[in-house]
Amino acid sequence: MTAPPPLPPAPAPRRGVWHRLFADVLDPYAFRVALYVLLALPAGGLVLGLLLVGVVGGVLTLALVIGAALLLGALWLVGGLADVQRVMAGLLGVSFVRAGPAPAYTGVWPWVRATLSDPATYRALLFHVVQFPLAALCWVVLATLLGLALGALASPLWWLHPPLFPLVWQDSTVTPGLPVVAGLLLLGLGSLLVLGGVLNLMGRMWTRLTLALLGGDMGYEAARREVMALRRAAGRVALGDDLDATLADLAVQARLASTAQAVALLAPDGTSRASSGTAPAEWFQESGSARPDQPAPVPQGEADVRYTAGGATLVSFPVSLPPSAEVLDGGMLQAVYTPGTRPGPDELAFLLSIADHAGTALHAAQLIERAGTRAGEQERARLARELHDSVAQALYGITLGAKTARATLDRDTEKARASLDYTIRLAEGGVSEMKALLFSLRPDALEEGGLVAALTGHAQAMEARHGLTVFADLPAEPHLTPDAQAAAYRVAQEALHNVVKHARAHQVWLSVVQAGGWVTLTVRDDGRGFDPQVQGRDTQGRGTLGQRSMRERAAGAGGTLDVRSVQASEFGTASGMESGTTITLRLPAAPSERVAAVLTGAQS
Image (cartoon, rainbow, N blue to C red; front, side, top):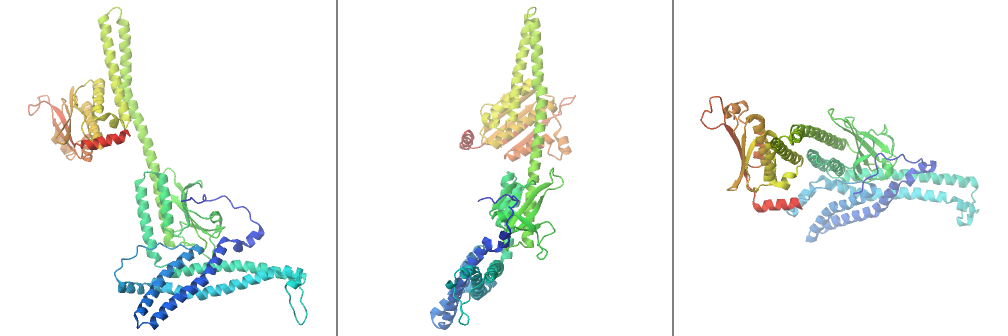
């Protein structure tokens, strides 16, 4: 699909007086109208002849079997020849709404009843009857004007060579003088001007007649197309994956569901964001507002209807954004129509809805960009806190340990060795912590390293940063889908975070076991625990915000989450058991071949 010229185009070059004077004659639309009128007479005569032969022949031979066949053939020709007439109307720039699928054939008599009960049949028949005499009248008028113009414009040849045009009056040859030739030239030029105006008038007449009699039930089809276009546009805007693709699809839907020749969405500076359809450049060059004698059908004052230099109709709609948007001006939607075609109020309301959808898409894109910026700022702030609390402190400790070892190296070898061991542990912890931070910043790291590697790195970071003792039982990589892997890692991450923040634990047990088609992830600590009954009443039985997040992740991956805790007090636990919390996540294991296929696709 070729994009139309940018809207609005560059100003049109100044035209000469003669060009403006003979604009109707030089307009390509006038030649297309002349071609249509030229074809309408033989086509109308042929159509009328076929219908008369079918009807008259069918009536005369009705007693025979062939009579019924001729009548049925004539009835079928009414609709079939109407389709041919619609194709010819394309010379006038008339486009018809595409009809829906034809009804299923159920027999001859049901088809006859449906055809005879359809008003479109009688409108098409009326067009066939009217076309031939009306085309003949147009031929007479055009032939008269054309003959008068050519004869008058040939008067200089009569003056220069009188024998070429012998004119005898009362036994004497008439020879024209210079004033007579000048008058005839003016008459010829005037005839050409009238001829151009008459062709323009005939084009409008045939356009309206064709739309009125061959248009069918355009209201229903147009409404159906507009509803389908709005439904697709709403779905595309709701998807919100690509702004350029969304605007391009809106422009296509606006053109296909309307009678516009071309539709474009413009930015506030006039540049084209998206477009659909093609049209001559002069159709986009405005020549003024709508004429007072032909008021534009403007719905609720939202549309700006103007006539262009090429005689087309240019309609503009503002693309507005809600007050909460950062930029309220979303540009405009422009639709251009062929000369003689004007949109009705319903179509203008439809295009206004498309413009509103475009505004919604632009606002959604702004919100997504704003959310991405805010998320980036929050991530940078989190990373700064993490670096300050972990790596920066580790580097500071390494510096102190190295200085202590250097100061005590000569006089106290054991103390220097202890300082170096402390420095090495801090360095290893800092490396583990940095790996964990880098892993959290890379969304594809889980797919590359797997769940076991990710949990191992996180456990090492917890030991180095918080002094916890983590017993990790991670024998082999479980068979999980990428979504289940991500859910398992995030649940373990949240559980370990709760251990550090709330449990006051010293030891943590982390394990992943696959058995019986299920993968079980367990995180257990020896902390102070909590009372599940009290916490359940405080949060409507769903636990804390962290627990709700873990349960949602588990449910989203098709698994379950179980939280058990024993609360400790100064008198010990109520059941005599050791205090602490155990979080168990159960996820369905994926088939081995499915996991292999996913990994192969990710690597390729």
